[in-house]
Amino acid sequence: MRLDAGIPRRVGVALAVVPALIFAVIIALVAFTATPAAAAPGDDEGGTGTLREQLDAASRGYLDAKAALDASAVKQQELTVELASLESELVTEAETVAAIAGAAYKMGGLGPLAGLLSSDSPDHFMERVVLLASVGQQQETEIHRLTDARDRASEARLAIDAEIVTQQQQVTEMAKRKEQAEKALRAAGGGQVTGGIVGTSNYVAEPAPRNANGTLSEESCSVTDPTTGGCITPRMLHAYNQARAAGFTRYTSCKRSGGGGEHPLGRACDFSASTNTFSNSAATGGDKTYGNNLTAMLVKNANALGVLYVIWYRQIWMPGSGWRSYSGSGSAAAEHTNHVHLSVY
Image 1 (cartoon, rainbow, N blue to C red):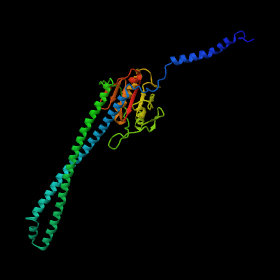
Image 2 (image 1 turned 90 degrees about the vertical axis):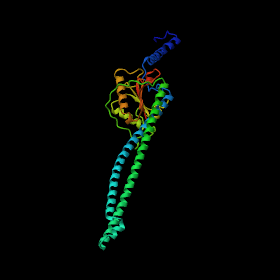
Image 3 (image 1 turned 30 degrees about the vertical axis):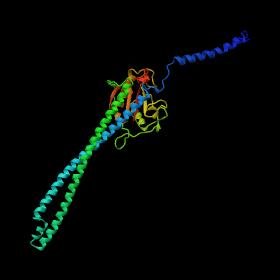
Image 4 (image 1 turned 45 degrees about the horizontal axis):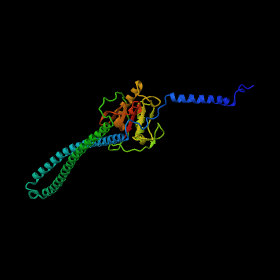
């Protein structure tokens, strides 16, 4: 005998679907109450697209000017050494010419013709002819050398003056770019000088490749991003690998296809303060210490890595400006309290 024999058909159907409904409700409740694993911070980096463009342009301009300034300083030093050598050569050449002129005067008396006429024998006459010809040729050669040394010294002095002008121009450009970045931050509600991030790192990063004149070349999104499978620039990959080599191996995400800033260009990475993903809350304790130390490493090696800026815990570091306040929208991602943002040239 069936147990449901006395149950009306409609009631039986209803009872049959109850377990399925209960299962669906349980799944929904779990999905609602469980803490989701936060993905990449997304486009909400705590600032507008205009702010990011301004920071990018300002930091790039500053680094370009600094590279030109450094190259000019090296060139000036080389020219200064060359000028010192030329001035020493000038003294030697001048003394040589003076000595030859003195010898010619003593030997020639009233002049070459008088020297020849005073010869007391044919042999003496021929000796005088050969000697005077030799002295004249040597004197002409030394005078040419003296003139050439003077010209080269003059060119070196002019070149040094030109390098000084170049350096003054680059210093002015660096100041202009610094103000551009700080003005953009102030317009977004930040930009105030802060005490910076207190972290420690003794790691010395391997420098990223540079051009012969010390500048950083433009790079495309051309190498595989180990964090997303997308693409990043070789310089960004270098910085990522250096962070890993320094011991900062927690969850990281670099390339993002949407939004603005450097992420879509493959020139930025977000380093989570927590181990396995991006937390939806501000880092504390050991997680915050991790972020502090990572930030310290990136700032310490900023020149070697080609850093445009670093953002962490409501603060931004830029070359030239140092640490400034960075205004977010209130979320952990926007305030950068759950991840360290790195942008490279």
